[in-house]
Length: 123
Image (cartoon, rainbow, N blue to C red; front, side, top):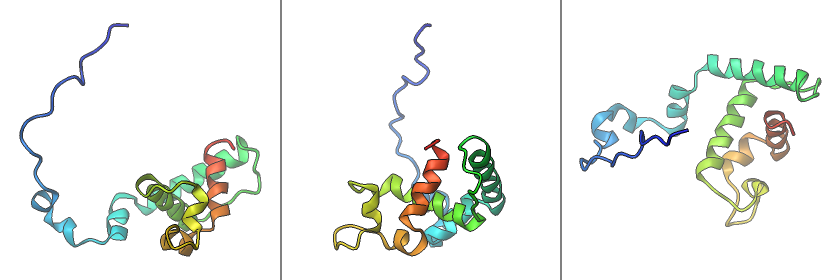
C-alpha cells in the first residue's frame, strides 16, 4: 500500500481563534453544564442498553445492570482519567493528601468503575 501524505501538511501560521471569542456563551458554563451539552440523556440511555446487552451476551455477566446515572458517572470518570493522570487507578479514591479526587470518591465506588471497565473490555 502506498503511503499517503494526506496528513503531512504543515499547520497554518495563523493562530486559532480563542474559544472565548468564537463561543463566549461557553465561558459561563460549569464543567457539568458543558458535559450535559455534549452528552445527552438519549446517549446515556443507549449506552446503558449497549452495556447491558454486551454484559449479558458477550461478557457472560447475566446479573449486570446499570442505571443511566451509573453510566453517566462512569463516562465522566473515564474522562477525568484521561486528563488527570495518577500512577494507579486506585489512587483516584485515595485519602492521601497528594492523591485522590473528590469527584471520584463522591460519585462512584472504585469497584463499580472496575466492573464497568470489565464489561467494556471483556475482562
